[in-house]
Length: 514
Image 1 (cartoon, rainbow, N blue to C red):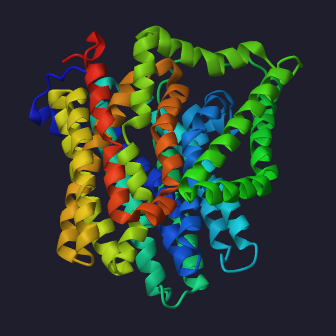
Image 2: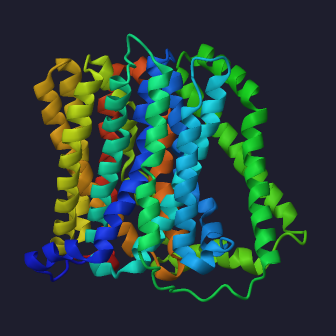
């Protein structure tokens, strides 16, 4: 996008705008669940004696973030009984999602992973957390884009990132310190300590709920949905639930066969990571095919309301391709899917890596979570300021290049081992870059979104942003087992190189030329 003609003073004043401040608290609320799925849960499971490969498979629970475009139309269309009339379309769904996230976090605290069959129960609770957290993200993103113009989006994304990282600090470093203080260590595991920790994390979601009750509803930029009856909405919801049930059924009924096939492929090619990727890709393809066939079948029944489905699912996609043309639209979607691949894949295994290097939970909490937080916030604000002054595309270039470079620094730490000074240097560079790149990327996605289809289009973009990285990240433990940490970090860094070429191709189009 072209650079904005904005002075440094005007840019700094934008941080005081009420909508910008609101995004800080929503960022906090959105940042709480993520590390309770990723790193904090990973350390909990490791302390409980769960093997490393199984630990990283739990990161797939966060794939709900990558498929949220499937139910974004429901959030966009369906009213919440009583609440929508009282709070408005966005605030009603925000309150429901935030309370559901709190309930999911609390349900995780009730499961001790050392008990027989407990991992299945925990997996269900973690998937529920991923689903509700992704739902919250859908509505927050829609609120952010609808509540202010394009000139504030870079600053709002910076404020959101600052709050998001503080939320991650709370659920990341905060949970590690709390669990350690309550008596759980790698040498002496305590379920009670982790149970209390996760129960307290559930209470932090009250910050987001309070914000929702205080703020005003953004202006509605799309036509009223009042022409649809409750009966039509119920049929729409039934259609969605049937599709989800079919999708989940494939994974439930193919679990045993998948395990057998994965083991057979592993024995044949002597590569567990590759075998797992092949098998899970086949399961995903089978699930998607079954859902598509079911929807096609249901389209012949009264459950299928053609106009409602058209407006909810197809019109947002058609609008995007009409605005940018087929070739550019496809290029943009590929770019969105690859921009954060290097950073996310590496992040899945990072906490386990730090612990394997001999760093204690307190060192991880102090350096990686606390110090790293301030570096990320600084990077986010720097990214927002630079985007307003010099344009989003240039900052995307800078972020992509620095991501590749800073991820290579993990090689240095892998060879150095337990060296707190090198850890500080690596975290400084990595988190500053992550904040800068994320601020520019969120602003870029916001500008791609048509305000008439906010929830669905942004959900598609943010789903693509995480789908490939999180799918690959689920095998990071197996990749480390096969390649070692140095080989894994080199591979993760190289994944980011093609992104530079994609930005160059995008910038050649007049719509994105500075």
